Structure formats: C-alpha cells, structure tokens
Image (cartoon, rainbow, N blue to C red; front, side, top):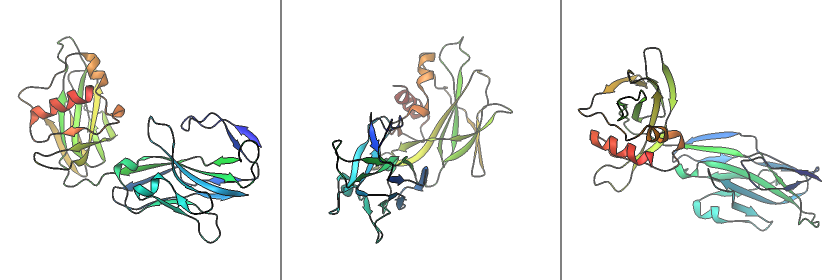
Length: 270
C-alpha cells in the first residue's frame, strides 16, 4: 500500500491507500438552490466493502455522515434526510437529499474500506471531495447601496455597502471601477416575523473618500442612498474587520430603517 498525506482541507494525519482500489468523486463543486434536491456522485473500484460519507463545514474537522458496513446505511445524516445507496452493480454510492438547506453548504468526502483486514484495520481510500453550495431563493429583491465613511477626519478609507440583492451584482465604486460581486448570505428578520428571509450583502472598500457607490442587478440600477447622518465607525481597525468575506454567521438585517444599517454593521465588526 501507499502512504499519503491527505490534503489540508481534510486534516487527518495519515490514511492508507490501496493501490488496487479507488474512490472517485467526479464533481469538484455542485451548486443548487435552497429547497432543491441534491445528488453528489461517488463511484469505487476494487475490493471495497464498507462505504462512508464525511462532511466538513468551514473551520471544523470532518464528521462521519453516513456509513454502510454491508448491512445497510446508518449514521447521523439520516436524521438530516441524507441517503446513500448502491445500485445493482454495487459501484455507485451517491449521496442524496430531497430538499437542500443553506446549512448543507460544505465539503463532502466519499470513502471506502477494503474487505481485507490487516494490522492497520483495513485499507481506506478517500475521494477528493465535492464542495456543495446551497444558494438561497431570493424573493422580491430590492437592491440598495450605501456609502460608508470612517469617523476620523484624516482617514481616507471609505466603503460601499450593497444589500438585498439576488446573488450577483455589479458594484461601482468610481467612474471606471466596476466589479462583479458575489455577496455573502445574510438573513433579514422583519418585525413580528418568526423566520428570517435570506438575501445577499456585500462590502467593497476604496482608499479614497470621494467614491460614488452604485449597483446593477438583473437590469435594475441603484445609486447611493443618501442618509441624513452617514454611518461612521470608531476606528479604521473596525473598518478592516467589516468584511463579509469573513462572515461565517448569519447576520440579522433590519430593513427599511437607515439607522438599522449602522446597527447591523456594528454587529458585523464584532
């Protein structure tokens, strides 16, 4: 057998791979809309007998989702409506779910263990992993953009905040600075509502205070919303932390009231 080091996104120190068996995941990335069915491919060759699916969420170690040791599929994933089954040939072991959720976004690894047991407890082969991206169904998006400035008068850092858009926008921070932007998922909770409504938000920075903010999304155009009091921040350090790229949490968006934009941004900076 061949001793290999597993890739960094699967932080297990050593795994034994058999030269006579393989596990193949043909899809690098799968993107589905929230609520739509999911199917992640996995096939295998050789004398593999036991099969597994692992899930790894950002910043977390891999966790066993499903396993089939020859007497049927078991595992925590069944409670989350995940299933995996072999067909008549016994080779595919696809991971399926009838209705995807936003929290299903993660990297999924298929693995197989040989029938022949040695001192290492059997040879295990892992697939390269498939990244699942579940995107929200945005209902009635109303894109808006705000210009944000620092509190310090001598600072030149400014930013544009775009909210409530559908997946992709073109965000302009200057006359010729047009950027296609993928937002991070945020959750809007209307007053009196029990559930949050998902949408997208994004922040783009610029090293000048004389920036013009405008966005285009699905043929709709929105210029900078001028507030009576421009939201400001206590330090430039806080501005640096106000990046949606580091958002791993669901954020509460309180729409329609301009002051709530400032409140939400302070939550992001923590």
